Image 1 (cartoon, chains in turn brown, orange):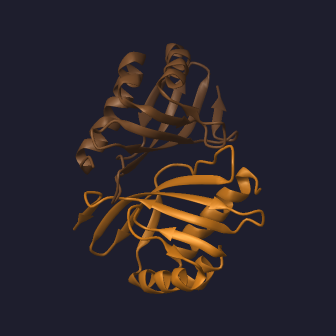
Image 2: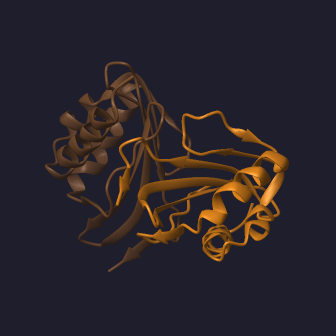
Length: 121
Length: 121
């Protein structure tokens, strides 16, 4: 199991790579069999190919992910972070929950945001 | 399924009741068969009796839960919130994820905080 510091560092790398519009670096953080449910309540994406397609689509929009509080760990292989997605057309309030495998790869990401959590400019 | 506004209002009631040291009001927000995993990675409490015992123990400490960002909903029956637990002896950074039943009762609460997320004064 990765340490608390390792999980938080990986989530920070996720934010940094996303904000640098480096989709390949974001995708490299995921385990091969990972799942992404963004938003929670949608059909989860399964596996690297689907996750790759997702980030290759969303990252070019140029949105920036801005943490609003320190990343939280847990007493297991999970961690969570609250951030705002800021783009040219508005913002979305989000909390991501991630789980990690032994090698520190992300095995699941679930993004909590609802239809009322986005604000159009 | 409760609406986004209903889930967020229930989470706000949870914060307000906790901060008012009204354990009975907190417990009343839970469904009979609810689970509480606080922190994530600990053995989940199952059912109203265990949850009652938990809050009757922790609420008298007088800690205050302070939201650090707006509560996030989802596209299902889940919502999440980032807050700080402030007490006389220190603070803990936490993100709670909750699920709700049709009647708006909390069916699960998972609290993300790790051993490195608490700061002693």
